[in-house]
Image (cartoon, rainbow, N blue to C red; front, side, top):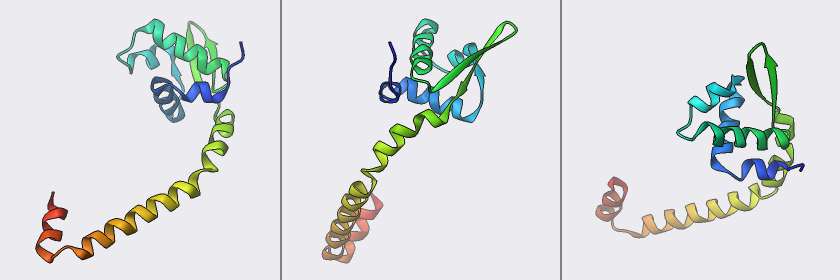
Length: 116
């Protein structure tokens, strides 16, 4: 079964594996050692990432290395990016609202709120 990039990034452990492999190529054992998850569970996550085309696994001698294929994350990036302006507008609006609230508070209360 061919999976897609959205299935790859749906799980937090897989997202952590992607972040880890974005920094460096690692053996399967090195990846597994970084997580408090069973090795069979890590193997399943790696299999899904491979099926989605997010990583390649290559054999070098007795070791199997995992390498990120970042170009295959582009569809997820493009989908998320279309909502960037929406969220930026909402966050800017929220920040403006908070600033208005702070200017309405007497000086003593505004300082106390900042210290919390």
